[in-house]
Structure formats: structure tokens, C-alpha cells
Amino acid sequence: MAVHRTKSSQRASPDVERLVADAISLAASGSHIEDQFWEERLNVRLMRLLKSQNQNVIDASLDQTFRINTLAFEVLADCAETLAESLVMEHEGQNWDVLLLALPIVAHTRYQIPSGVLPVNVIESTAAALQSSITASDTRLAIVPWLYSIDQMPHSHCQTRLLTEALATAAITSSEVKLELRDMSETIAVLADPRFIIAAVAAPSGMPLFRWQAEVPTRQERGVSLIGWQNAMQEPIAALLPGCEFELLLPEAYFTNCRLADKQVRPLSIRAAANFLESTLGVMPAGLSCVVGAFGEDQADEYRISFSLKGSAEVVYGVIWPLYDRESVANDALNDLSDDESPMKRIADALRNAGVEDVFRHAMLFDPELCDDCGAPLFPDRSGDAVHAELPDDAPTQQPLFH
Image (tube, rainbow, N blue to C red; front, side, top):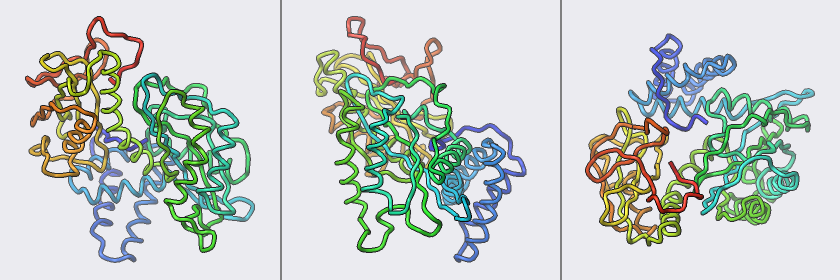
């Protein structure tokens, strides 16, 4: 999905150096006409890499710009995402603008969140709701007949571009979506997770894609579109996700909505963890203690949150709070609560909202260790060790864990 940070070990190639240099030049540009020059240079280089499926160069360039120039990183990331999730396609003498959409469903449960094949009636309901609440008139749609979990989504710009091209053809020609869905990876069982319906919307070039782009009287503000979308899809999604509580987010561009859904699910993961421990161990949230630590090789890539019973050092449960490309934390501010936008402040607020009062915050950066035996992430205890999270031996085991 290309929303997580990459850890490319590739040495800087000439292609990487040119991409980085152009991104830095665009970030420093002081005029629109110069912006256009550098954007064209970047787009040509990136398009060549996307067509050749050379994701390694793109990842290495993003890594390098993230380290040396955050504004250039934003520029390069935006250009790569734009080319991966949108295109112009010619059909029968008409150019069409196409955008890949992510339709997020942020869900949590005490059981399991379904994924897999979308029933025909849900696909039909989705198309009708998009046309009535989201997309502009004269647009065409293609919907993938699959309810995606995050681990089943395209995980690179190159993969996303291939998906965009396939859906663009299906939307513009009103033909069947041709994708191989039989070999999807298994969904990891977690109690709070986003699910996605993926679609493409196409409009004649220069015409609006969304209702909020249209002119009066057909123009409709985003908030009104969201309410219409939620009302129309409430019943079909409730039938699709039995035993789940969920929130429908506004259908929007693929990468933006993937990040938004991932961020929305993080506090839900903490609430679902507290609910799970209450139902499994009979312990109210006020009877829990939490330890929070930042994990990463050179900088914080995620926070890991350990749950223990008050008065016990044993970690019984763990939740991961990932950081994404556009989030960064200085190594000397890993446990800072003074900034309302800091990850630690958001985690502390989410724990407090879930009813957990005893929270210990580490100031150190932990190595992102995994269990040698099962590959599960290790979680920090109060003494500063990274340990395995294990429920007591007498706890029910039929429900899934987060890690």
C-alpha cells in the first residue's frame, strides 16, 4: 500500500539520486511555472519506474528524502501516489480521468472481522450508493468484488498502478473487472481493523469526479455526501460484518483513505483490547496497567503498548500503534505529552478514554524485536525488557489476539 515506511538497503543508484535531486528542487521552487517544470521531470522518471515495476528505486528515493529533507519527501510521495492511483485513458476518441478509490470500513469486534468475496447484492448497493451520494453525473464505476483486509491490499506504488489500470479499463468500457482474487493472503485475525472496498471512478477529462466538485444545483458538500453514503450503506455492511461495530468513512482517493483508516483504527485497537481483557479475564480497564514504548531501528516506526494486571509484571496482551510516512518523532521526545499531536499524547488519551489509568511511558527507543519461535512482536515491560505477551494459562483461547 506504500503507506508504511520502507527499510530499503539499496545503495544510492543514479536513478535514486536523480529522483531525490528533482524532489528537492521541486520542494524549493518559488513559482508555479517552475513547479510545473520539476513536476514533469519527476513524473516522467516515476512513470518509467512504475511501468518497469521498479519499486526498489522508488522506495530508496523515499527513504533518502525522508532522512534529509521532509518537504522533499512529501513532494516525492505525493507525485508517486498520484501516478499510482490516477491516470488518463483514451477510449473511442474520448479521454477519461480515472481515480482509484478506497471505501474504508473501520470495524471492531469481540469475535472476528470478515473479509473475502463481496456478495452481488453488496456490490450493487455500493454502486448505487456511490452514484447517489458520492460521484458526479456522467461518471462510470468499477468495483472489485472483494472485501479487503489491510494485509491483502496492494503494498507498493507499482502494484497499485496495475490495479488502477485494470479498474480503469473495466470502468470506462463497462466490462467485467479482470483480477485474480483466488490467491489472496490469509487475513490476520485482529479485533479492530479496517476493511476496504476498492473501486475506480472515471469521468470525461476535465469533468468532475465527485459531487462536491460539481456546479450548483447538483453540487453537494462532503459532509452531506458522507451522511448519504453512511445511511445507504449501513444495512448492507451490517449484514456483511455480523457482530461488528463499524464506521463508514467518506470514499476518497486510495492512498489518502488508506492512511486515514489506519489512523482511525489505532485508538479503536486500544478500546477493543480493554474490552477483550474485560470479557476474557473479568478485569475492568481500571484494573489494568499499561507500558508504552517506541520501537524502531534508527527512529520510531511504531509504539507498542503492553497490558498487564495491576500488581503483576506479566504482560498479558499487546497492541501496536504504527507510525506512517508523514508522522515522525524525535528520539529525544519519544515519551513527550506536551504536544497534543504527538503519538504518545494520542496513545495516552486513547488509554484514558478506554478507562486505563495506570500508564508507564518509556523514553528509550527499543529494537523492533520479534519472538524467535512464533514471529510475534515483543512488548515492553516496566523494567525495559521486550517480552512476549501471553494470556494466563486458564484464559479462554478461542478469540484472536492483536499481535
